[in-house]
Image 1 (cartoon, rainbow, N blue to C red):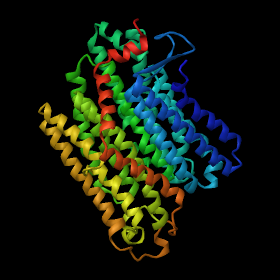
Image 2: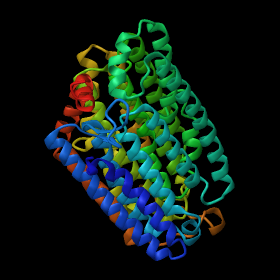
Image 3: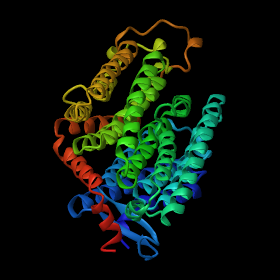
Image 4: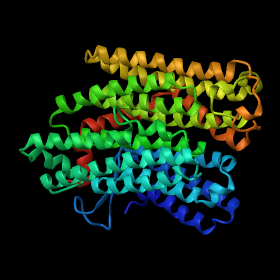
Length: 499
């Protein structure tokens, strides 16, 4: 068995068990978590280079041949997702050293975080639909535990909405699995690609595709299934918000890309046409929601929805350039969005609130924070030469190439509205003078932010600049991922061999 494939899954679970053993020794628990994140990061990057140089890597757990055994496969798309997961895991674990208090550590913060990361990597690497369902359940349990960890009323309110809508998504997913297995007799993704071609009842297959679209759409936060996201992401500690923002919706987007490029490609005019309409509506509603709020994390939460629209847009257009843009957009967005949430935590630490009306003066009092905010914020808005510029430009160009002028215009307009939201945060929290308010009006008295909070923010900002200034290697990886998605026989042959 190729052990490097299972390390990104096994390592987080091993360190979840290790941190449970030392749950009363908080310092050791924190250090163990950072060590685990470092090892996990190393395993993820090593797997990235292995796939980059050797192509798709697969293994069969228990040595049962595909499609009968449990397949783990890493192509260019999944390995990009796993590598960014390793980066964000390390960044958030370092940030947690300064933010997470002993009460949250005692409640199981570190074990839950490691379980969540293991579930995310499992979802990215599995080659079997039933095991994708299992990893979704692992993620749901860990994320719900993290969401209500502080046991505040606001957290329980957001947590109930989060878990109820995700349970509905799970029911849709398991219903789709049963119907698909009844039609094809398999749940191995590579085998499904072959078996659906022999299904004569295309109407039923299209209905099953719609069920999967809804199930993964809830996980992704697409229109009109996104309301759970802005109701919950602003409630937990910032480290948890950041990892949620960077990873959870992307698992849904990844699953949608995988299924609608490998399995549900028999009626592209209908399925991908519907996805395109949904993508446009997701972009518009997300950015309008962001424009309506004045709380730092709520604005960022609505922008997650808006940016998911861009990712789904690339899948819906379904051309080499569009899929390349979609993969590159996911890579850029995971890093930028997690970093913005971490920055919101520093602004709250130093300013005492997440409400923009209660913040101000950071440009003068904390110039480093102002620079660090400017980089990911204006990358998200698509300013050249930052990474978001290339991501948006590729997708708009892909829409123009196939004469989808309305889609291209919408994507450009949403980019301008994103700039408005980021400018609003800049003007309120950084540029205007700090307002004169009494202590009772703020959530907490401002305190200097720790070095451990700034370190991951600086690292992620440097990575954002690097992707923007030297985009070629990242675009090459995204292009290879798009090539494999449009030529599924490459993935099928890697998993099934000559079978």
